[in-house]
Every structure is written in structure tokens, then in C-alpha cells.
Image (tube, rainbow, N blue to C red; front, side, top):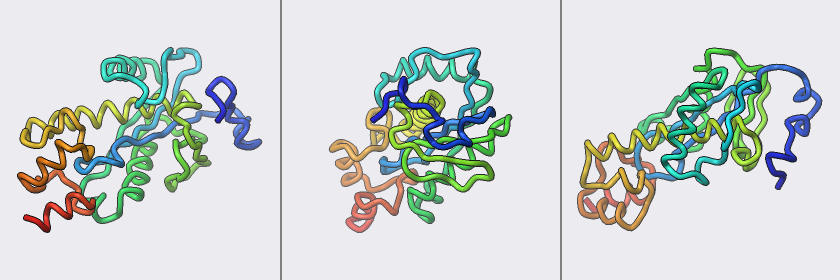
Length: 207
């Protein structure tokens, strides 16, 4: 796969060589069993580069928090949005993720000319949009969006932990770890759990 150093948006086609604002978009929280899915959109300022941007999963929590503050301070604009547990259960997690991405782009103060999204699927948008597999490791704006989405979702998980301490959301962030699955088996699902996900559905049936 191309590295960030070698990857250029011009590789996506002639339109991507034209001047204009480009927003990077990524999501956080597709795999967990609980909580909303978050997405962020970021338009970086080329005159104020942010050092150390990377895929949020490759960064520690403290580093992500510091970078999130830098992104909010130095980007031209950014926005974070989400799709609720109820929307996930009705739409499915893929469509809910795309919905959160669209909301994030629509929440930007500036309207981008083009949008790049991490992965292989794109939300329905009014402007040109392209998906880039492993884009969070290739495109700085997608890395920035990855960080913002992850930080906001982790903060939400801390709130869930305070509301439902028996499940340990602060540690596993809603992912199906052995401790989380054990808590589900013991206590059954709470209001934050995604009923359409297999382990939660199984816990409901057992309850």
C-alpha cells in the first residue's frame, strides 16, 4: 500500500488535481456492542500543518487527546457527528456509519469541494467523494478525522461507564472482550447496547 509520503490525491483522477477544499472523513465505533457510532470530518489548513497525525488506532489515548486539541485549534474547520444505537439497530451498522459521516460533512462550517473517506464505501454527498482503503494511514485529513471520532467516542464510553458501571465501558470501550461478554451474560443488556448485534441478541434471549 502507498504510504502517506507517496500517496497523492491526484492519483484519484484529474478532478482531484484542481484547487479547492478537501475534507477527510472517518468513523469510530463500528465494532463495539454498545453506544453510537461516531464520524468526523476535517478540512486541514495547509499553512498550519499538524505533526504526528496517524491512524487513531496506532496512537495512545493521551497522544490522541493532544492531537485532537491541535486539530480543533489549527484545522480550517472540523465537525463530529454520530448515529444513535436506535439508528444502528434499524439501519444496520454500515448504513448508520455512512449516516454519521454525512452528518459530519454537513456539519462543517466551510463547504468542501471534495471529500475523501476511509474505507471502501462512501456516504451520499452533494460533492465529489472518494473512498480510500487504509486512508487513515495515507491522507492527513482522514487521519485527523479518525483521531477526532475516536476521542469523542472514547469520551462517550467514559460517560456510559459512569451510568452503567457494571459493564466496564471505560476499559473495553464497548468491544466484545471476555470481560464485556461476561458482564452481558451476568446482567443482560443495558439501554446502550445494540440489540441487532449477535452477542447482545443472544444475551436478550437468555434473559
